[in-house]
Length: 335
Ligand code: HMG
Ligand code: MG
Image 1 (tube, protein in one colour):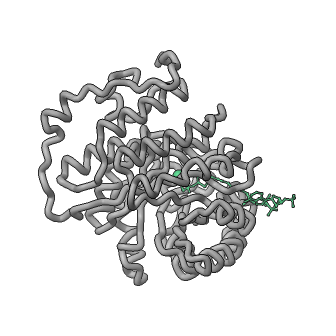
Image 2: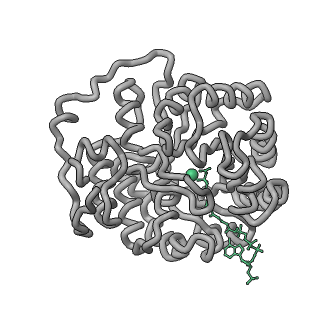
């Protein structure tokens, strides 16, 4: 695939025809929720893997454009060790640039990733209103991503969650490697449930089940969600986080929706990957998700043309086309 010329600052034109014609044709499925909250991770999960540093003003504009396209939960950055994720080392510079957004876009939430108390101090100093901790269902990934065993990582998160609660800051818990691990292979469902329950019991309001390397398939999704439900976890507290390495993310999302999940993580343009998980590619592209949801008559609040134009704009900054099929269809092959 040839690399398109980089023309930072310009927005590609969306071919409006297909959307103006009313496509995708909405056909409501009564078994699905009427509305889905998209938890947008492009500015964090999407960018954290980019080798070339993206300027902070571009990140701020990206997040602003995502909010303007109708997304109401936009994960902004990480307060992790700057040496571990150099791309997000500018979190302190980014936060003040986002300060006016919740007023401009009512209902906008801008969560940030926090691994430990040091990260929490930094996040609170910059008025983060919502945070996320991130645990692992496997030992190897816990060590590679957090430099600790899985249980030691949980012990690191506990005071973070408690102090966040004292500060009135809601916490999301991510759990990685829920469907397979690139070093350990299959991950027993009971092991995933045990770690997920630990996050919920320590006070995380929501649990996002991560398919970090994109190996899940729909039956596996059903089985894991049913195991959580059997353990007494209301489905309202679960979110799904699919990477699209093997092209299964949309099918897995549909399975999760049929099980009652209404919070779906996705990354604008399909950006992403995890620097500490070999073979992780981008997340489910938000545009592909929105196309499917609107076709199913499920509300998202997202303006698909504005979102695709944003991903096209970011693709130009990064110097390569978006991997999202929907972005390419709407913007053309160099989108
Ligand atoms: P460590 O080296 O064990 O840290 O890293 P430590 O606690 O031993 O501290 C060492 C030094 O780092 C100390 O400084 C600390 O102050 C400093 P010194 O006293 O030596 O001068 N330090 C920090 N500085 C700034 N901010 C901090 C911080 N913490 C310690 N927050 C640590 C442990 C957790 C910090 C490290 O492993 C880390 O930052 N890991 C983050 C890795 C990461 O961000 N991965 C990507 C996100 S996870 C993901 O993408 C998966 C997800 O998308 C879901 C899915 O797909 O499955 C969420
Ligand atoms: Mg991820």
